[in-house]
Image (cartoon, rainbow, N blue to C red; front, side, top):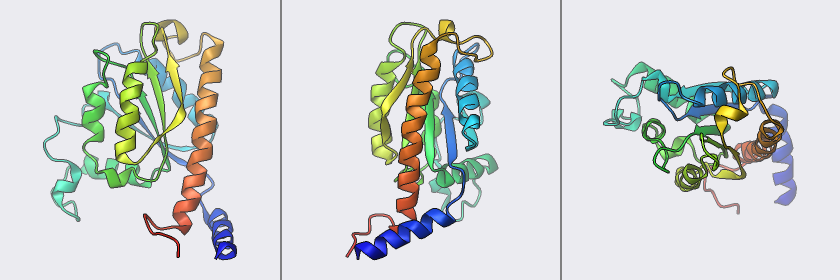
Length: 216
């Protein structure tokens, strides 16, 4: 059994896509948001790794206040907004997620949870996520990060142990998202190295082991 399993993993690795598919969730929709700097910085680091990237951003204002998640439209998604079906496809096909979040009132911003709640948990399951949080103050959005741990655990896209927190984001990045201190480069690298390892491990395992099927 073990030999057959190892052979299946080798075959899955040979046929797997060269590049990981990443969905970036950007959680702030505020005017003049610091999140724009963080988004630009992270996008440049992700592109340098040759990931296939799709962005789902609260500032795009496509998502109204949740009243009909995508799965309410039935298996054929009849009548669902085109953008919602498109975004669901991105989420389903992703190998990992990067969640960029500030904290509002020491909590996850409502625009972020509103976006995520439009999709069923099955879209996210058995994939890792990486948390990038920030604030204008000294804590780097860590209180929102702790709540995001619970949310990603419920969705099935457990966040990797490293959290990239950015305190005083207005002093850590310029307006174009260029880093202004060494923490930015080292923090992003630690997170993305871990996320990359977990994403490939889970991608390879999904290819040989269907969801929740117990090996005989």
